[in-house]
Image (cartoon, rainbow, N blue to C red; front, side, top):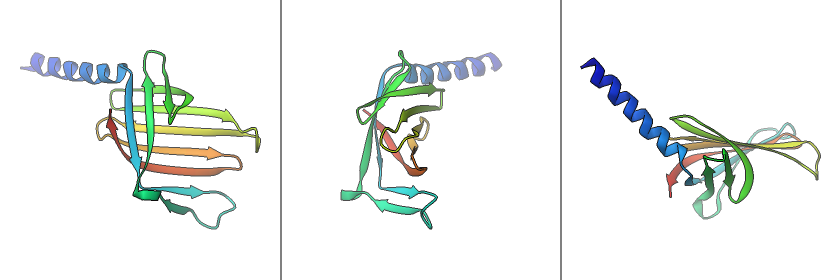
Length: 132
């Protein structure tokens, strides 16, 4: 019985890893975004027009890269339970470095995102994803 349990666990992990190893496309939706910055007295939440906003996230696991709403250059970190896309880019208008991080929980099919732009303005979203 013990050998069977170990085999089933290894088989389950292999299936999950295979799903993440392929190229994947998700539609991740959210209903509002929270903005925060040092110059703001408190964070502000803005509701999406038409009650829903979305990100189209594409993952090329073989290349280790991804795109978000057509913007390329995201580095991909993957595990059996989550995928993280990260991107840093130079802000030529304000100077400094902009960052974006999208984390997809593959078990719950939920996501969280955080984008920071100069001068330290942060936009955070969270919601649900569907594989396409």
